[in-house]
Length: 415
Image 1 (cartoon, rainbow, N blue to C red):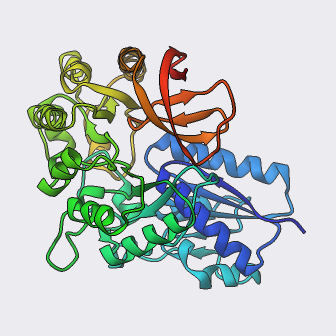
Image 2 (cartoon, rainbow, N blue to C red):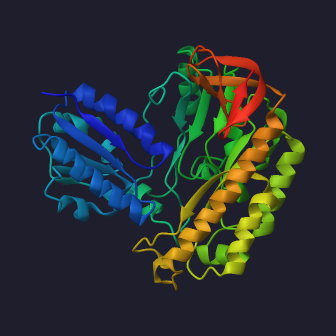
């Protein structure tokens, strides 16, 4: 018999939950199984999941294949009908010890997926790093109350649920005691944290509490935010707390007001620009990443040019470019579609613009001194999340102060 194989597709939160499942599977004595934690963000992500399932089955036809994650939650029947699949497990069930106890004994129904919209609490398992000693993660939120017209994720994750601040603080203390020098807060819609808790605190309240009550934590990082929902406490923390890393990944999606309205986003172009300008004045070393969709339904060339210009107007550096992909069941799937080749071309132009932004940013870092968190013996990350190469091995997980000598292949090079 063999230990289970785990395959993660999609977001950082999925990777976090895979680590939790590994612990649960080990405790349950699960053997001779492959677990694939799927993503549903695009149709391509679902196709990739199906391909991976077939590949895992070809590699070992005798082992059980357990499918979970957002695609399993939203399309349980699709995966249950695949002859290679043994069981389909929902996003809530995958984090419950009783699920794995049954799986370890070969028990349980073929489909274990309940109504995620009925869930009212965030089940945030305790894990350490994601396969490395470099940094640790705390899931502080799950789900989303918004209904963007292109997005299927609320139906895979449910409505927004927050982890209480006391629980997050205690987990941070535990991780710091284990030697982690950086903690990343993660969730689906981070800036909605607290809306379902007493007093409706904002994400900034949680950030301030973590920094105040865990004074030995050298670095705190936020994974992704919706800038229009950023509360004043969060902006103040960015301005005054050096231990809060100067890097924000923004859920922008587009730079044209008509497209943003058709996406049912909650901000306009000028809102994004104003936020970026405001925070940069308060924290001059801030760097921004952003999600941008190319070829959203009805997007004209002029509309796309507005998204392209947003890279410069917001001062974006790290782009996550998504060619629009139809997700059946979403309102955008019923809108007039952009030609696939046009979508592909626009995505390529966005990526090229992003590459130039990265190159310019990295060149501006040469000669500066940076505190670098070492992820691998000869690679780490700066506070602005730029990769930094070292000529000699460094202690993984430690923070090394170094001067930046040059750049190469989208990477900073330490002196």
